[in-house]
Image (cartoon, rainbow, N blue to C red; front, side):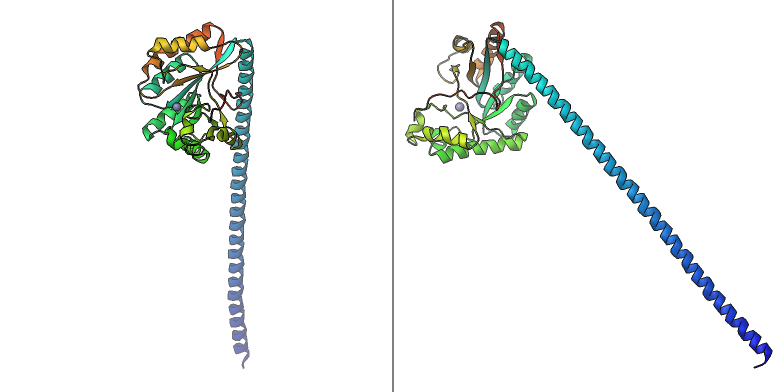
Length: 298
Ligand SMILES: [Zn+2]
């Protein structure tokens, strides 16, 4: 090999190594760029995640503050109501059974709203159309209570189990409509009914304990408007209620908002005025309300 050939060969090798070096450098640079991009991306994601977490914590804090504020307001309101009750001659709980109905219930709701009175509705199974009335009762802060899926005595009182099931079914319907799981009940015919004897001996004796074990509280009444009985007109209803209301006790007034019950609608405002003028306060039934119960007759 001549000197020239050796020089040429060396040049070729150097040239070849230079390309390899350049290629390695290029790969290192590409890897570095990828590395930097990944780092930036990870960092960005971390920042976004941190922001999401911080926002969520802030939101949770705000919700908690609002809840605390609402609770404080509720407690204040309750304390004010308690004071009012202590100063009052007695408490009147207006209760409406057998609704809702498209003609009567809206009129009753309108009067209650105008007079700023909260009441209790013991509802029966209702159609989709009437579900709006149940929603409205809740929206206006009345108590939704349970009367039964059906009112047909032969079905309700064929056994204690069927009666409990009858309450459970209406409880579920009310829950589906309002999200409220009510445990306040009124037996169809009241706990003192004798009609159940025809279908199951001793069923009310059994039920008066069973419903409590099942977590319900049941309410009868001690002021009967007789609007589902002998009252012929609004005057009769007004007289029945106002003559039976007594001082220094919980007066639970039985009325109905079934269809066509104009006479109760027409008596309601005057009954409320009578209560207010005579120093009573009106309340809805709640979990804290002491039960008003009849003696059982079957
Ligand atoms: Zn009823």
